[in-house]
Length: 296
Image (cartoon, rainbow, N blue to C red):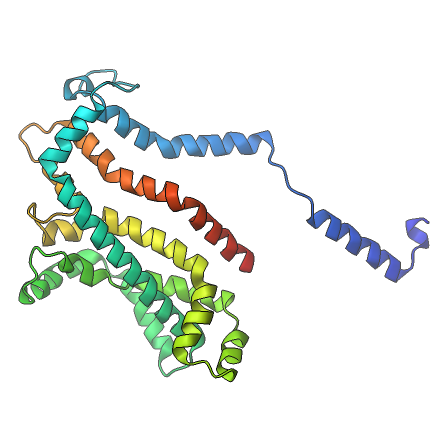
């Protein structure tokens, strides 16, 4: 039977079969895709590789021209020196506690606030959302002086809660979760839970959190990396007696002639926990991102 002899319903049925069959086919990447991805991977890894190369050399060799392009034999010696001079043991423990607390708090409170802005109806919700977004436009440097005075009045100078308290929840996290839940959480699910007699706590625990899990994973990763790498406020609020990793690494460059190889070794040590965390949980995080993309 030719195409001209098909009736309209038959033609529509054939087009639908072709569409379904085409949707089941797996797309294959071409050679150009691999070339572009390889270039992006090399550019992304270049700073980390150079840090490792510099950390494995001596300061004298780094000052020579041309610079070294391969690894040397002083990596573990420089790491040991950086660990002892900067007191990275205490700093690692402090930073893990600070970053973990900030991550859990930000994800929890941002999800609750994002759900409220996305699905609950209350007076001045639009104004409050605009005010929340507006705080993102204020440079954080403007808040350093009043924040420091506030923490001093509380008697928290050089204590970890000074770093934790200002970032227990963020405007970015609230806006991020709000935008995700608007699309990913149907209002019908909330209404059905209400009809079944679920309380607000049960709705959040059994409906909101499962729907928001992919975005929560992404927000948790971003928050943990930001908290681990934060430098401006910790260097003001803390000192070398109770430092985070970034504050401790700052001590490596305060000598009359800073040893660049030791500084690079310390930077590599400060980066390793993030790399290990991504290697351990990267698959789950990427899976959460893909799950959220499919739902969206």
